Length: 285
Image 1 (cartoon, helix red, strand yellow):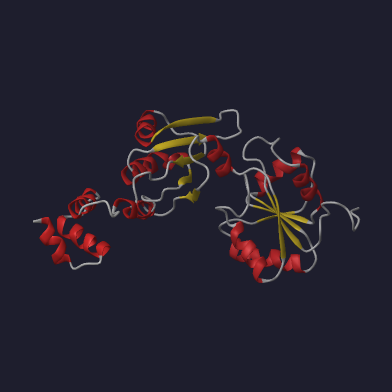
Image 2 (cartoon, helix red, strand yellow; image 1 turned 120 degrees about the horizontal axis):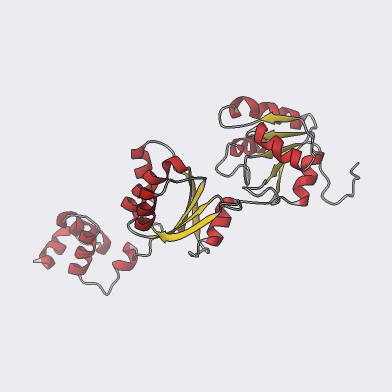
């Protein structure tokens, strides 16, 4: 039984976010196993998958399902049990719960009700893929899964076109080809690292370009879960391109190279310089 001064004591009334392996079952910490064996119950995305993990380490705990389709109903029930003094470990099928995961809503509910939440760190596919990518890691944006219709996907990608941070996405095999084609269309031909089945026997790391990846998967059937790590936009920003050393004509030509017609480009340069568009028209004659 835990004593009051025990290091890493498992407390009552606390929600524990416990990271689990993303493929290799050996990738779990001693502290995670301690918490899983001591909490009153485990909330899991898929109790069947999670039961296999617990069984591997001879842990037997009451389990409740908490997933995308029952979170609205199950979240308040879990919170009430926590307020009644029970402790709970939240786990997902793989990796860190509450990241691109319905656990986000449970954490929000707990915060609103002043229920303590703490984190047991471990595997995270996004961070592992970023480290493997050989792309800049100092600044990055995690986008998770791109959901919605094809038009919604295109809008999301278009909004990221000028982002100069390394971009990280999750993708399922049956959507990979369409996603790569849309990314090539939105971003142009940038470097990409595709991390497939990370930590598993069939782990594969492919460093290529978006055009190369598109060509590859036109002939190879996508298999397994993917993390896509894509280089950010390295083209000069508008503020860099429209510097004081550029002539009016160069500035107009810059905007036209971005796809704007001449009149729209002239208006943009006028705004940037703080003058009436007629002044720019005169200098373009």
